[in-house]
Image (tube, rainbow over all chains, first blue to last red; front, side, top):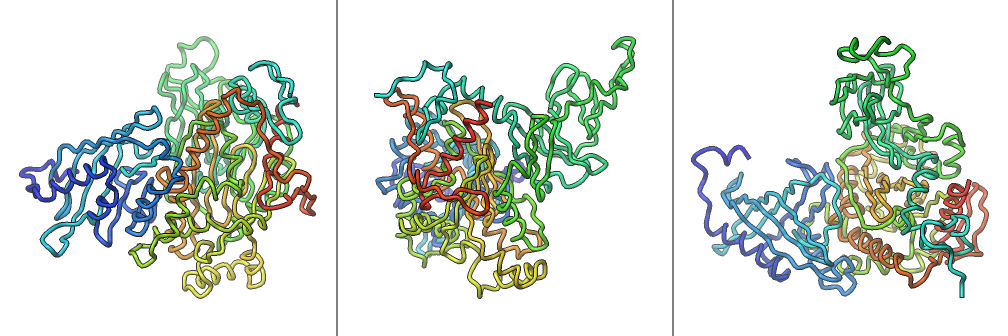
Length: 163
Length: 444
C-alpha cells in the first residue's frame, strides 16, 4: 500500500483500467461465461481471510479458486439446484480510486459489491488487485484477482455470488 | 389430530421429545433457548481449544461457553486454567483479543491487574478503596474460575458445573475419534494452524450439529456442486487447491449404495460418528505410491511401528459430533466449534490442524479441504447455510408442530463399543440420540 502513496505514482494503463470496469460490468450483468473468458488459462481468484495474507496455501481463504475450480464455480450457477441462489442475487459493483497496482501490469482499486437477495442487502467492501498478462494478440487476460475485504476476518454469512 | 402443546414459552421439554419426533419449539422458542444455555451449555463438557493454542506460559485464548465469556490461559507454572473474562471490580471484560501473550490481564477501566492464574495481583491507588487491604489476601476478588477443566489428548474441555460426570465418562466411545486424530499424526503431534474459518447462519445451533452426520442430504443439498464438479475437465490448470476441492465435491455425489453402507454410530450422551465415504485415495491420504504418502507412512511407522501404523490407517471415520458444541473430522483434521448466539443465529468456527512431523504437502491439501468444507464462499457450504435458514423459517410456521426423526428407527443395534449403530448409513439415529440427551439435560 505504501508504494502507491509515494510520488510520483506509476501511470495507470488505460487498457487495463477498461478491463477492470468491464470485468465488474459482466458480473453485474450475470454474463459469467464472458467474465470467465477474461481470465488466463493459469489464473487465480482469491478472497483471503486475513488482511495482507501472504499465501492461499498455508492459510485458509473465503475463496481461493485456480482456473479449474473457477470454471466449476461458474458452471454451478447454471444448475437448477443452486439453493443459495434461489432467489438469485442482484448486484452492483463500485470501482473507484483505480490506479496502477503494486506489480507490473496490475491495477489496484477500492471495490465494493452491493448485493440484494431474499430481502437482504449486503455490502462487501475492500481493495481489489488485478494482475494481467498479455494474451498474445495485443490484448490482456486477468491472471489474478485478489479482493481484500475490510472485514475479511469477521464472522460472515455464506457468500454465494462471485465478488 | 395431535393435541397441540401449550403455547410458546410454557412448553415442557419432557413432552417436546417423543418417539421419533421433536416439537418445533426446540428450534424457535427463545425461552427454550435460554433454558438450553442454562441446562445444557451451563453444565455439559464444552470444547474450548487445543493445547497448541496455549502452548507456553502466558499464551491465552478467549472464547465463549454458551453465554459466558472465558479465558483459557497457561500459567507460569505451566497449568492451563479457565477463568471468566470479567473483572471482579466493575465487570468489564478483561481481554478483547481472541489469542495473545500476556504477563497479566489488566482491566481497561480502573487498572486492576490479574495474574495468569487469575489471582488479583495489583490494585492501583489501593488506599482509596477503604480500610481493608487491596488486593484482599483471602482471594475473594480473584478471577472466578470455571470449576472443571480437563484435557483429553490435547483437546481442552471445561464444564461450568462443579459436579457431574468426568470428561472420559462424558465422551464415552467417541473418545476414540480423538485417538484417531492424534494417532494419525506422526509423533502424536498436532497444532492448530492456517488461520480460522468462521461462518454464521440464521438458524438454531442444533441445525448444524444435526447436519454434520446427516448422510442423506448431500445428494439434494449439494446437487449443484456435485454436478458442476463432475462436468469439470481435469485437463484445465489447477495448482492443487482446485483439484482437492473438486474431488471433495465429486465424493459428495457418491452413489446411494455407498451412503447406505456407511456406518453411523451414536452414544447415550448424544454424540455420534459416521464412517468415511471417501474412495478417492488422494482425498484421504494420497495414493500409496505417492512420495508424500510414502513419507507420511514412514513417519508414522517411526512412531508406531509397521503393524500399528497399518491398523491406524485402516480406520474409516469421517465426522464425529460431541454434543452439544463440537464437530470434527479426525482424518481430515478439521474441527468445528458451534457457538449459539440466539435462538435463530449461530456462529461456527473452524480450526485446521497441521501435523508438524508430516510432509508439508499434506497441510497444503488440508487448507484446500478447509476452504471447500468450511469456507464461507465454498461451493458446498453455501447450500448448507441456505438450507439451515430455510429450516428455521419453516419451523417458525404453525403449519405443523413436529419434526420427524424416524428414519431407520427400530433398526438401531447395540454395538460392543457402547454405541448404537444405525440400521443403514443414512439412519437418523444421531438425531434421536441428540434429542434423548437434550431431553435429559433439559429435564434433570
